[in-house]
Image (cartoon, rainbow over all chains, first blue to last red; front, side, top):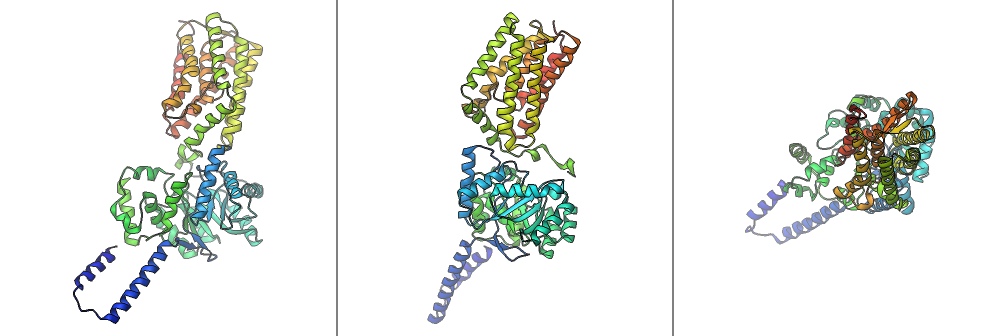
Amino acid sequence: MAASTQCRRVDATRRHAPIDRRQWLVTAAAAAWSARAAAQDRATPLARRIPSSGELLPAIGLGSWITFNVGSDRVARDACVEVVRAFFAEGGRLIDSSPMYGSSQPTIGHALARLGHPPALFAAEKVWSGDAARAPAQIEASRAHWGVPRFDLLQVHNLWAWQQHLPRLFALKAAGRLRCVGISTSEGRRHAELEQVMRTQPIDFVQLTYNPLDREAEARLLPLAQARGIGVIVNRPFREGQLLRALARHPLPAWAAEVDCVHWAQLVLKFIVTHPAVTCAIPATSQVSHLRQNMAALRGRQPDAALRARIARELAALV
Amino acid sequence: MSEWWTYRPSDFLMFSPRIHARLFESVNLQWWPLALLLPLAGLAWAWLLWRRGAALRPGLAALGVVWIFVAWTFHAERFVPINWAAVAFVLLFALQGVGLLGLAALGGVQVQRHGARAAIGLALWLLALLAHPLLAALLDRPWLQAEVFGLAPDPTAIATLGVWLLLRADSRAGVWVWRVLGTLPLVWCGISAALLATMDSGQAWVPAAAALLTLAALALPPRR
């Protein structure tokens, strides 16, 4: 925004300069075209390519830890349907879950069935077992809960028994029964082992924790993902809501408007998804209003490197 | 699970406090009017036991049924779907229920109506029946989410601790049974306090205080 402010100053100094009519018309047409292109650009949701396939994914997905674990509570289940409906309406695609998340899988399946199984869905699941022999039954149970013919992505949850699970997942992918293979961790755990997996295994995705306060992944894992063409899914963008609760005690700074943010959640998400290695962040919510706030981070101006550094610096000082 | 020392209790909390509170609403609505009748039945038994020393074994049997009822209707039907660890709670409550039924059938304990320990027991019992359901409203939750003896685990466990302090074993075998049947409600109060504290609930102190009060009462002689 400093540049645009500077541009306005330059225009002011030329206010009384003689005007060439042809030059004026060319300049005006260019400005109009540029403004239209910028407006279109702002309206276009931010999408990232999956490095291994080139497929475009909107950079904000939907997590399901805690928020979709509602058991048999019909009111809460219906509320989740509306969240998923709003997610697809806002252009979302990737929904992430795990067998560890209680009733989240049936809740997602219920929502997908109610919405007529939106074709845009990118279904991301996990394998969560210390016994590889139980994995096929678990994957099949997960698939039945979702009501999908196959998963787009299966990740080894928290690196649990990854040595046993990955060969099976690669075999599923080779047989055309799975599109992508990944591995997950959270809260900065076992990064050394994760790095080893990223260096030695042909995985498509890695899922890890990254936000303006938890930046350990910046040092090695995110550059490695870029170098090896591994997509990055970011979990816990808001530290399970703790970060937003802490930030809510402070007013949103005026400079947040430079990247079209009207809420802390958007500033945090824009920080995350503008790291060049990141493919998608997966905030979880059970409220449509929060979902829309999150998805708004896909639109408008995005922070450059300097503003990203400022976001990290100033949020760390506030929390 | 490696790096286990890096995990905090909140890492295992897989449901929201809102959904947890709605479990009580769900069980109250499904089993209405038991939410009213069970505390009244508990009060009637308290009166009979305290004033007349009567209805000990039928009351213990009914209390056993109540524990099994909570194991099924609350833990198995509602809590397990949102918390896979709750399978252990089903077993704990069912075991306590079977134990109380066994104690009712075999005997081995007497009512101890005198002394500080018994007074604390009666107080805990009455608080569980009458005061615990008020906590929901005090914490700005709807009345429908009141936790009621016989339907919710905490008031059931706290009331049982009260009953436990009113009992005295009258045989060597009875001493062991008595110890076991008090231990499980104490364990539950510890679990519940930890769970509620992890959820930042303002009522986490209630099961913790009930357990500590029970342990303090145990330090007192049965009759003083």
